[in-house]
Image (cartoon, rainbow, N blue to C red; front, side, top):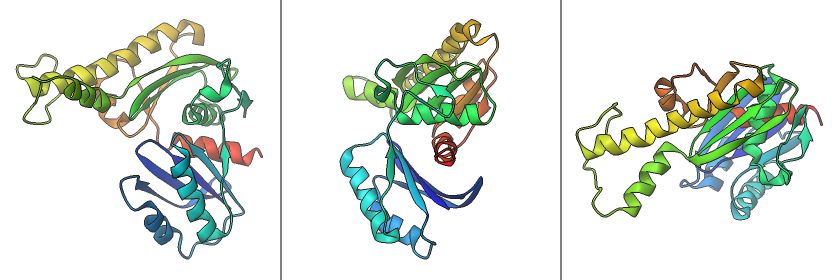
Length: 245
């Protein structure tokens, strides 16, 4: 039995795995009392044989989670740092560790599940795009602000744009709130579509599009390209990687 940890920008997700079965799991946001929440969630669970973690956050939060795991189970996580190659996926980056481990593990999950060739879009704080060939080669990708971060950045950098409400996504807006929301979300959708179209020839034509992340469900209906909504990419990739160790 293994405990898997996904430390994302917004929250920590964990899952207890035995083989391919998920025995338990939960999530806690970083603005909560993480140590208290983990202690409550992990109380009474049998100690895992190993703990594997993937992190895109700072060392302080990694240490907080490691201390919580040590207190609950008497062992600390082994943190996966992005490799040049693992589980049949070959990193395109000249400096492999510069590729976010979340992006790498999403590709590992896709490869393990037989979904390559594909385009992977992660829609969260950042919007990430990656192209994965049928033979496991990562062909590169893009990073942009996620649609919510686009909105926050726009509002923070301007004096006159102060919508009175959140705004609705429309094709053409007649008020500032809708214009901001629509511009940011449709820009994200357009980037996903452009990347998928550009990479399609290199992937053999019409690759599948896998959409994950906290805002994936909201972006899905805005896409012109058919897409599959996938959940817990990092944890599923981490499970595949842990099984190979």
